[in-house]
Length: 357
Image (tube, rainbow, N blue to C red; front, side, top):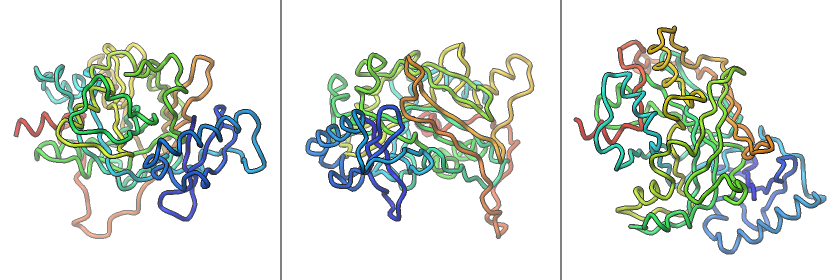
C-alpha cells in the first residue's frame, strides 16, 4: 500500500491512503490520525489501511479526492530518529578523493552512519530554504526505510522483518559548512538542512521483484533544471544492505517505531548511469578536465523519482526548488564563504572524521 500525509493545521498532518496509480487518496483518520500513530500500533492499523487501499484501487468512493503531491507533507513530518548510513563505497571514495584521502581499510566491514535532524522534515514539493549560495548547496538522492520497533542487538538475518515502509530522500547538504564541521570532528549540524522525502511511502510488496528483502534494484533518476544528473541503480554496489544498516544502528540500543534510516547517496562504481549528487559529478569533471558542475543556485529545481518496469512512478517525485532564506540581520549570523579548498566534504564520513581527530 501507499501512504501519504496531507497538510492541515497540525504538525503531523492527516494520514491518507493513496491509490497505486497515485491519482486518488482518502483520509484514514478513522484508522489512525497520523502515520506515527499507525506505526505505533501497526499490527492493528495496517490490515485496516490495507483494506482501505484495496477499496481505493478497485473504485474510489465518495470520500476519495484527487491526489496532489503539493498538498503533502513528508510522510513522517517529524520522527523520533533520523539515521543516515553510507552504503555505497563509490560515493565515499569520490568525496575522499576530492580532499586527497583514500578509503579507510575498515570501510568495507563497518558502515559509516550519522544521526541527523529529525524534528522537521519537508514535503516533496516544499522549497529548499538556504541563506547563501556560497554554502555550496548539494542534493543527495537516497532511499530510506521507516522502521517498526527494533530490539537492541537484532541479528542481520531478521533485521528486515520490521521494515514498515520505504521512501525516496533528498538529503540536502551544504558542502562548504560540512567541510568546516568535519574539521572540528563533530557534526553535522549546520551543514545539514531539512531533509525532503517523497510524497508517498510504500510497503515493500509495492516494489515487486525489485525488493529482495535487503535492497531495491531499480534506478533512481535525478534531474537538475530538467537536465539529467544521473540514474544510478539502487541495488548495484550497495556494500551494506538495509538489514546490515539496521543491525549496525541497533547494536547497542533499541530503535523505536517510526525511526527513519537512510541508505546514503546512491552511487555506482564508475558512474555508468551518472550521479546521485553534484559533489561526485564535480570529482568526475575534474578528472576529465571539464569545468566542474556548479552547486545548486537559487531558482534551481531538483527532481528525484523512481519508476517501475512499466514506467509508472512508485513513490511520486521529489520536485522542489532552491529558495533564498531571508538575509541575516547581524554580523554574527553571516556564515563562512566557500572556497577554502574543502570542496566535497561529506557527512557520511562523520565516523571516520571523528576517529581521526
